[in-house]
Amino acid sequence: MLPDGKLPVKVPDQAVFQRLARREWTVTVDPFSDCLLKELESENHAVSAQVIDLNLEEIFKDVVRGKRPQSEEATGDSSTH
Image (cartoon, rainbow, N blue to C red; front, side):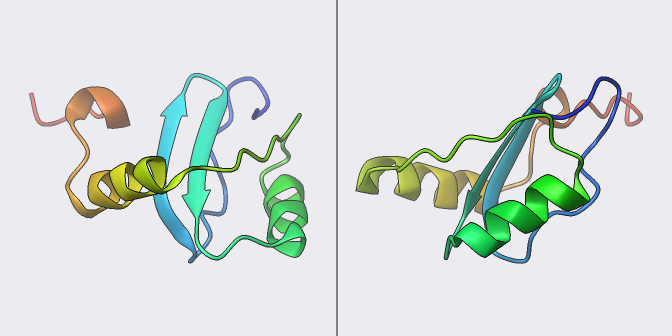
């Protein structure tokens, strides 16, 4: 969870997929480490963080989502219209 009105400052090189919905920033990373979690919390001034183990199907979906362009709605970019 990010502070009010803040965007992620650092997206890790290990990011496979990310989604931002208001203050909730969801990032799928490979490989994961506790050190990476602490780094992300610190550099992005996270209010809270939670690690969720994904099953193979969820990982596959995030890899596929991460390889295609994000829609305007998902990114919040309306500058093209």
